[in-house]
Image 1 (cartoon, rainbow, N blue to C red):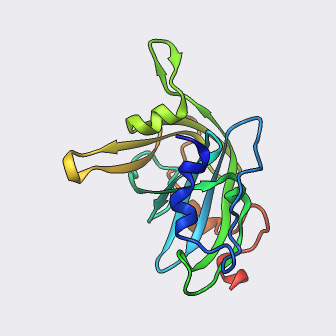
Image 2 (cartoon, helix red, strand yellow):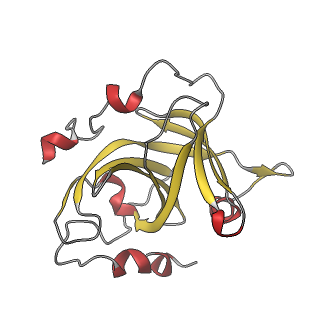
Image 3 (cartoon, rainbow, N blue to C red):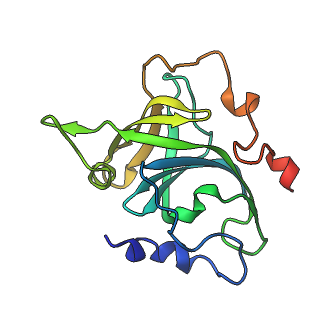
Amino acid sequence: MAKEDSLKKYREKRDIEKTPEPFTSEKVSDKPRFVVQKHDASKLHYDFRLEVNGVLKSWAIPKGPSTDPSQKRLAVPTEDHPLDYIDFEGVIPEGNYGAGTVIVWDTGTYRNLNKKKGHEVNMEESVNNGHVDIWLEGHKLKGGYALIRTGKGNRKFWLLLKKKDDKIDTGEDILIDQPESVLSGRTIEDII
């Protein structure tokens, strides 16, 4: 799907004159990036986004990501976002879609680990197939993670899982112990 077509839903939900959110995808990188944005909208949640073919493929994680492989997190797919959203922090004004405060809770690069018959499966195909296998190199999140679509018929849903590797941390609740933005050092409460 062309980048502009992919961003159609994003742009239809927002008014460029009323929200500070980015509308362009100009911040292209050499290595694919990810971002986790803490978003205090109608309900506090975390938005997990992966740079794929010039846009950010996006999932809302109601309970936030975990560093513990025993914790399965619901991941609700949302519309693709423009690349320039990767470092967006600020307040989306009341009356706008997604109104509330946003910080960049974590960001970094990722590697695609999906292989089929010894060859890498491209990320867009991985997302379409419902199985994303990645290695994160973030400030907070590190190691293997999987996004998996599961269920049948109308009962399909996605899960975000930490894979078993040497980056496991079952003793810390990273969401509580590290609530601040990796870009600004501010918390949601600091921005309000």
